[in-house]
Image 1 (cartoon, rainbow, N blue to C red):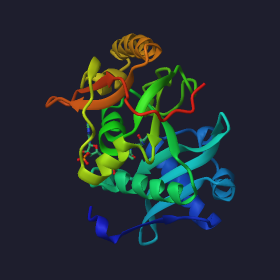
Image 2 (image 1 turned 180 degrees about the vertical axis):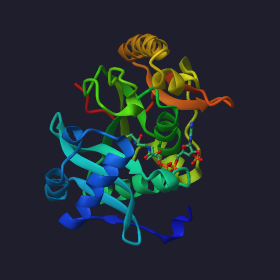
Image 3 (image 1 turned 30 degrees about the vertical axis):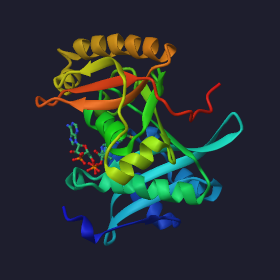
Length: 255
Ligand SMILES: CC(C)(COP(=O)(O)OP(=O)(O)OC[C@H]1O[C@@H](n2cnc3c(N)ncnc32)[C@H](O)[C@@H]1OP(=O)(O)O)[C@@H](O)C(=O)NCCC(=O)NCCS
């Protein structure tokens, strides 16, 4: 799809928010009682959150949605959803939405945007670490309970927390030169390409569950030792690998 005709902007009108609820349902396939409702989309921009739409004419083809949070007295944004309509993926629109989100957050004086992502989703992990420059060093076990989304394959909803420190050297270097700073690699955690197949078929779901459990333990142990996910490698066969090391910047509001 040609991105030239797509307009990315902040949205504020209830009529626009109906399209956000509909696209959310289309992308995730959630049951109605698991959807973020219209009322929350309407509320978010009024309390420091963001409802950012990518429009092709009158059609919403992507969005980024965030709500404000507080950690140890610091305000930050929690980006709850990023979605691009299937026909429009892999042409840079997801990244364009995130960069708009970053500019808008900086204009509102935020320094940090966080979101959670499924470590079994190879594309998302690559996108977050390599294309945006987020880091991950926290792991939430079964964050949302087991959901109705087929993307999840009825596994526990384990999530890594992506921290996007908007003015870190890491992010500025990536956005400036296209390069992430060098990393002292200490550990790799692998995701085989077959994971999607394993999740999709009831007969192989057990294999997906075993991998999730094994990786969960590795992530938790590595994070206790002060490691962070800093890079993500992609194999020619579609597999992915988290590269962990010690982040040499001081950005943190953790306890
Ligand atoms: C995640 C999502 C928003 C990304 O949007 P997008 O418009 O496709 O993103 P972009 O085109 O900017 O970037 C995607 C990158 O992933 C890469 N990619 C695509 N498929 C991949 C795969 N199977 N494995 C690894 N990387 C992959 C693309 O090549 C691209 O990288 P590049 O810029 O280096 O070429 C979109 O895929 C989506 O809506 N997914 C479903 C909902 C979801 O999972 N949302 C995020 C969690 S809340």
